[in-house]
View 1 (cartoon, helix red, strand yellow):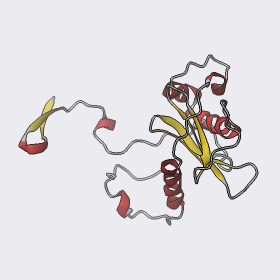
View 2 (cartoon, rainbow, N blue to C red):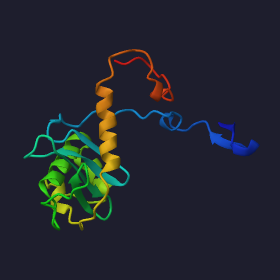
View 3 (cartoon, one colour):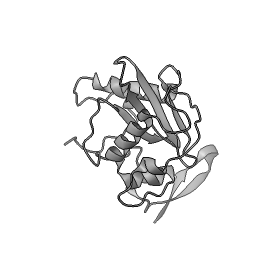
View 4 (cartoon, one colour):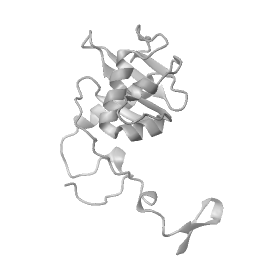
Length: 177
């Protein structure tokens, strides 16, 4: 069945009413982690902006974190502190922060999904990082780090059934289980 919906400037756009439900909502279902993760070492990991990226705790300084990433396709590697100081161990091969990020991404999303996102084929029984050989390409840490801080801010919000003002555009679909 096809329906007509208003398009910009007074025109109409033909829309297929048989579209998948996820295309008709502004909410994407949260996928539970494939395996349980320890958040102390890698508190934030995401597949976004054409990269596997996240925040990794420093092994030597409790107050320092690194923003690490692997770019999809080129496998370019980036790692710096949250204030853009380069990781001292990133010299043409992945540092321990990138290895930790990749390991946690595999726990969160599964090896197949991460490998497909990055555009790498990983034979069964092999590790993802064995097939990541890319150049060092510095990327700004601010965007990833600010998303991480936004996620942390939601941990401070008290439990409530009332909508959050900044999330008002999420439609109510059903009660939380």
